[in-house]
Image 1 (cartoon, rainbow, N blue to C red):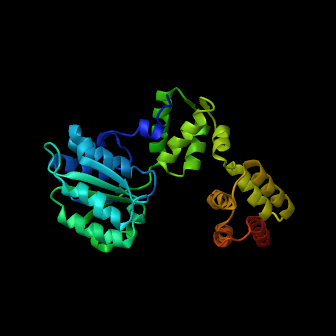
Image 2 (tube, rainbow, N blue to C red):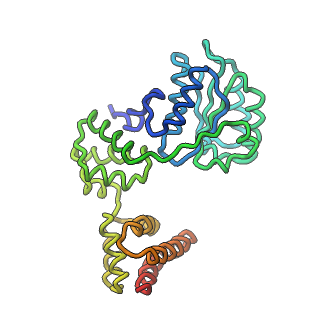
Length: 316
């Protein structure tokens, strides 16, 4: 039997188990105590606990009737107006089960819904408020139409700190018998970039190969380059050594099989960790942004990456 993904296996089941969003969790606990809540919008970056908070809120509120009174739809899969008029409306119009005074319908990735679907949803939210409360989860709340935003309380989730993610990784490692080294944890945090879900998935992916999680195994599994190697390549270009920097670039592309956009992202993040003046950092960011735009427009990766190195050499 295949074991569950760590993300689902160790998902907090109650609001008291969620960390890093204390102000929001306090408000959600107040809704549970009052046994009432308005329509809600959960907005914020990926992997910060938005979906988990919605599930935990419903579990704490409904307890034994959770399965009957809770429904979750991913709006990126079902986002058309037909879904709002059928699945959403049918669930919202029926009475809740047990002692619950309303049901909860979660629309994940609601910022991917079409405008007509959002306008149809607005009417459904108005007509069936007594029997159903909506939680819209999105990364960008500005993509939700204003009439829906005015009907909801917007809760903005902030990125989790490295300490919060580290505690979660250490907790899972202890439960699963994984030896997570300090450098391995730092590498996971670097690759995850504040996304706790991504960090947990990386931990599971690395642990399938070895129970000893090191920085080398993390970079190998995720196909990321060591930060030091990126900084060395930039420094070579700043020192005017174009040929050496170009050789290092080709080595990284061949060894790690990275796409041009991934190299650009790592270069951008490492610029701020380099021991150079602020004016040089500003110039480097301008160059990286220009090359990133060209890559997004479909330009040749190898030509643009070499152009990036050439532009950096000209700075010196």
